[in-house]
Amino acid sequence: MTHSLRKPLGRYAVLISGSGTNLQSLIDANERGEITGEICVVVSSRADAFGLERAKRHHIPTAVINHREYSTREEHDAALQAILETYQPDLVVLAGFMRVLTPAFTAYYGDRLFNIHPSLLPAYRGLHTHQRVLEAGERKHGCTVHFTTAELDGGPIIAQARVPVLPTDTESTLAARVQKMEHPLYTYCVHLFMAGRLRLDTKSGTVLLDNRPLIHGELDMEWPST
Ligand code: NHR
Ligand code: GAR
Image 1 (cartoon, rainbow, N blue to C red):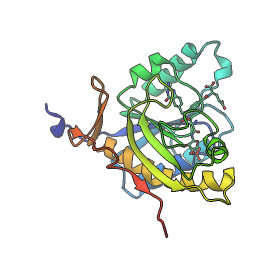
Image 2 (cartoon, rainbow, N blue to C red):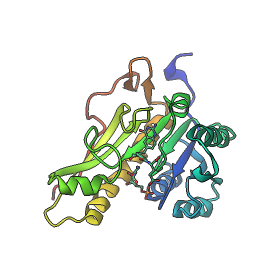
Image 3 (cartoon, rainbow, N blue to C red):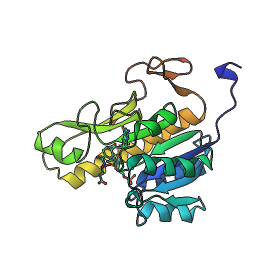
């Protein structure tokens, strides 16, 4: 069977640790029919994540996986994988998930594991990106959707959204501007994957759109300038 004849995919899982505004925008897009697929489970690394409430309100199954209950990252990720496998997701979406995943986990889900990172990768990998961008006096910032690999924030890039850094910005005003762009950017990337239009050729590390290599920047979004 060729790729183009494949049936549209159906189910995706969302992994969170906090507020879950990206989760909410995915739920809203699902309900508007903008994504060809449903959220099968939301897994949180924290029992007090507000995103769990968002999932429950929409009758989406939830689970909590607390790293303190596991003595190694391998055991933690095996437990996470076991929960996910009961739902057989076609895609696993990291949406503000704060635990670094093991190579075994990223290898298992390697061609169907998304992350959204709050910087214009490859710049500012890791944590506290807004603060570091302000300290460096950057004039541009943004977010990146990428396939997740063992290399932290280093996987193949799918799409980016750019926002200006204003002279009056604080960490919270800048984070809010970035997050406003995260929501449509992530929704669109998840839609393309779930519709079977976007995939990763793991051998070459090339992102494919409609069976041809993605052109650099073609899915990117810009902050409206006026
Ligand atoms: N795992 C792998 N293997 N590769 C990536 O690219 C990953 C990943 C897990 C999460 C999200 C990421 C981000 O977008 C992400 C990408 C957490 C940390 C971290 O240092 C770093 C990057 C990201 C998420 N976490 C600490 C840890 O020890 C815990 C920090 C905390 O709990 O506050 O895991 O930025
Ligand atoms: C988002 O800005 C996301 O890019 C970032 O956390 C926020 C989650 O917000 N991710 C990371 O920092 C990963 N280390 P949300 O819970 O409201 O979607």
